[in-house]
Length: 214
Image 1 (cartoon, rainbow, N blue to C red):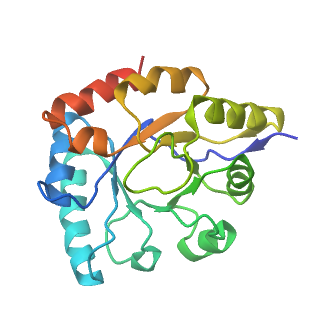
Image 2: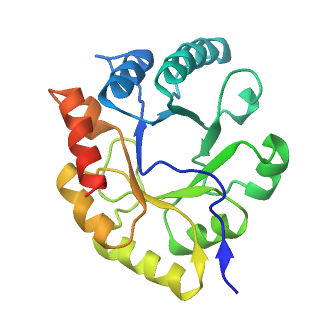
């Protein structure tokens, strides 16, 4: 029996904001939208709830102006307090059945997996999409890197089990990595550093967009 998980539209290129000194989260969201982003993932681990909501409300206005989906990493307790379309849960042990009951059917729920087994669990528990990674070493992930072989193996296993769910590669991905990852069967890419650390933010985003859409 085939397990179909995708019920909502999931963008193939997801830009993830981060705590960096040279650009605020709001500035990152503005630049990404101006570059053509249709999916912003707000990822902030350093602020109070009031500060988070101030950021989220400002970014939501930007996203509304550009027709961009806004997803918040973690912070599910803020559901209903701002115009948030979804949550991305980084906790590898998160119970997605319980989370779905908490947020309802209309909110997009994404998860993170570092193993094929966890990827399968999230698919079976009703995640709308899953980040798989890290692809390579990053400042935000201390887990083992998977590389192309790890991604290919995971996608092959999913196909063998007739499980269909959008799987996004995440963690240390450069634009040169995108084509082989897509050829390995990955649905899309989640990216942060390779864009927000680039000398040309807009150019870097558009390079990724072109690579994902090849």
